[in-house]
Amino acid sequence: MKYIPYGRQNINEQDIEAVIEVLRSDWITQGPAIERFERAVAEYCGTKYAVAVSSATAALHIACLAAGLKPKDILWTSPNTFVASANCGLYCKAFVDFVDIDSRTYNISLEKLAEKLKLAKKKGKLPKVLIPVHFAGQSCQMKEIRELTKEYDITIIEDAAHAIGGKYLGQKIGCCAYSDMTVFSFHPVKIITTGEGGMITTNCKDLYEKLMRLRTHGITRNKSQMEGEPHGPWYYQQIELGYNYRITDIQAALGLSQLKRIDEFIKRRHELANRYNNALKDLPLILPWQHPDIYSAYHLYVIQLDTQKTTKTRRYVFEELRKRDIGVNVHYIPVHTQPYYKKLGFKEGDFPAAEEYYSRAITLPLYYDLTEKEQDYVIDVLKKTLL
Image (cartoon, rainbow, N blue to C red):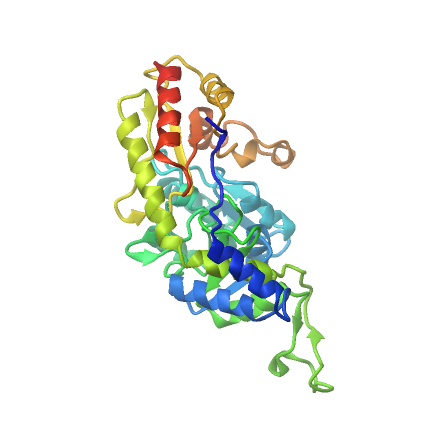
């Protein structure tokens, strides 16, 4: 059996032709494909605006800046995520803190969030920004999160890097019904890819205009935003400090082509996840639980070892699968346990639910091109390793 990664992209001839068409055009960097891609994502998600950028990390950064996150402000996010969800706060010189996770969804715990908000209000240390992370493609309970935070005037940025194409309460993730902005990732292991890239959706015109400036050095060509009169049709002004976080037409063309198949991609991920559920249900494992209000994008399929039913360690199982060319992974090492964050004052034991989850978690292969034969091989090796 050839090596089976935990995730990979699917590129077809239509994708290749879309990229070639741009390469043969007059525009390969900042051209019309970007606007088409943005409009298509906004329409798909049901938002008014979308801003394409060079990565989801760039998207998180400028979303925080657009939200007005400043030095000494506070940002909260989940400890069960990639470091980018927290680093974006540090880029803004803000303080970062975490809200522990729910042991079933692996997303931010509503109970812990409510407790932390009450305590923060008493101490006068409420967050300016909250970033709920839709882990593995399953949305956080955004309606409840909005209800808990609305009295505190907290800006909510959904980290939906795993979740484009999923649904919450019947609406597409990214519609911003219960948030101010949503961030997507188009890295190759995600649901759709642009090679590397990200997107921010929003329904707020002011946020949209600021995001558009921030991705391009803080520059505007909009006369209404300028100081004084423009010198001519060539004129632009830098009105704030922005960044070069632009995506290219080449990438946007690939993303636009991929978007046409997104529902097909997610349907197949659900089929494979259901096969895992049926095949693994009698093993000493905790399988991913799905909230009835949520249709997951199923970016990841994460199992946990049930330590009440097996003496096998996570490391042993992980290494046995890797020895047999199964590219399992672990998502995620809790951010607060990273050496850099320990230097900021965090320590092991701060967020026990995230740490307990991490100690037992293994991500199995799940992607559109995974064949049933390959999946059966993964299942067979896992059974032999555990039993």
